[in-house]
Length: 345
Ligand SMILES: Cc1ncc(COP(=O)(O)O)c(C=O)c1O
Image (cartoon, rainbow, N blue to C red; front, side):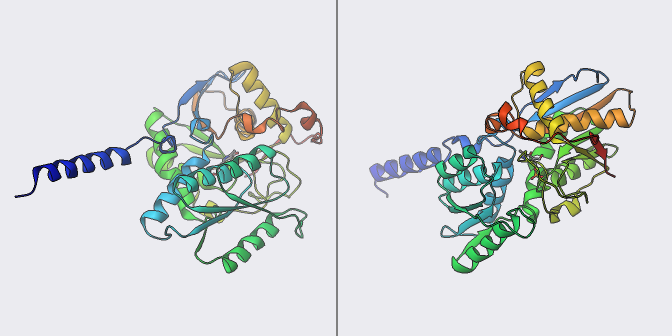
């Protein structure tokens, strides 16, 4: 018969490891963000519900994609403990990936460019990522192509890498289908319209699919900004980070989009200040963009009957301290002329 003392020690060890593995780390608290109601001045017929994604652990909706993608590729053994994760990102996704890579003891290299904000550069570094900053502008005058070139170079020189590639990785969209989309459908009683900002396309692709499964009559409206090429509009300089893109994301092919509304950066800034002043909501640029998009859409479509609308505020205002919430920075953005908002298709 086994020694009872040894048995007791073994039992205690099993109980201890079980509870230690259940220790609640704050990075496990991704999702289950609040859905609040908002009444917009002059648009009282809109019952607006807003998902506040700034409540995620590193402060943005991108925690959902970062946590989901890493969990999936670790579980299906696409990567191992020695894999180096690489991604071209200067924004919230870089911050989220560095935090979740650190949590999972994975090496992470973020390829960034000189447009990165000092806040994001500090956070990405502080969470432990290695930062490679490209400085050579590409043939379009931006840095996107140079960053992608650098990614390919890293994949050739470092053994055992995984390029997250949010613009093409179906797991990016899947993350939002399985979490954000599911939560919205669970929390909202009825949805006539959903307005979603677009950058890599992950959010709208995943969420639109889930919403249409639950509310087939719901119209999905993509919100993009002037200067972004996502919806076949001419490229021009964009100032506000987070929303829009200078390439068309491949994953967007699966998105179920009914209409596109294009907003300009001044409307975005104004709405950010209005949200702060009138609703005590200190939120990031694309939150202002979606509000501008909602107002422009219902005005242009002349929809005045009561409607249930859902939207997503992807992050909080702190990260825009030296951009949107710095009046001197705002003054440097050229005033866009007549084009206030364009319904693109
Ligand atoms: C700050 C921020 N995060 C995330 C998103 C959603 O982007 P994606 O299309 O990459 O999922 C947006 C788009 O509006 C955004 O502005």
